Image (cartoon, rainbow, N blue to C red):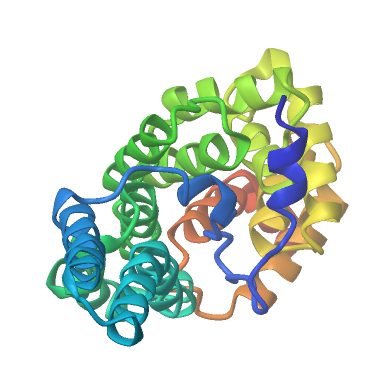
Length: 285
């Protein structure tokens, strides 16, 4: 059922976000949602007015172009509006805490967006911007709204986005529901495996599964510092302290200040805490 979505979602931004907050939903999904009543009425009135005027004209040389313009206008208005709103997408996907609020306000102020943009496109962008702001709860709600609008609550890309948003909000129990649904559908991405592994870190009975997911995420995400820090926690608890220390050091080095990545900072703190006794023992020896 979801194969077409997974294939369609392969296209990723030219520069993936360093904080792993990318959310990729293909146009084939959001474009099928409804559009605002104002835009639909404008489209109908524009097209029908020109066609009626053309039909009323006694001169074919004038009537035919007017009728053609009306038909083309009716057909092309959604196409042109989609082209205009898609020009906003790169800046939204790359939004930071400093720019996201302004972009959110711009969505509400744009006539093209408020009158012509598909409803699912608008909620999707709101979710992306709330993620950039660090408001995981609002982002999760926006992605849930998007799934409801496109009438597909099981869409992997949106389940994954909701899981990451809920992880950002600190609601791991709610994130787990989405991640387990993805696991059941065999649709876990590397980021999903990272999130599921982090959720499982709190359960001693699932330590082996957590380590397996985190190792896969570490490899699949190109040794991303979030995955490195989380894997360090799992390995330290399994007694593999040397490798855990190496991963923590690598994560700290690659992260730099890392102030904008709240999930990374939380994972680094957890890894530093679990490895603190090991570091003290090393200093004494």
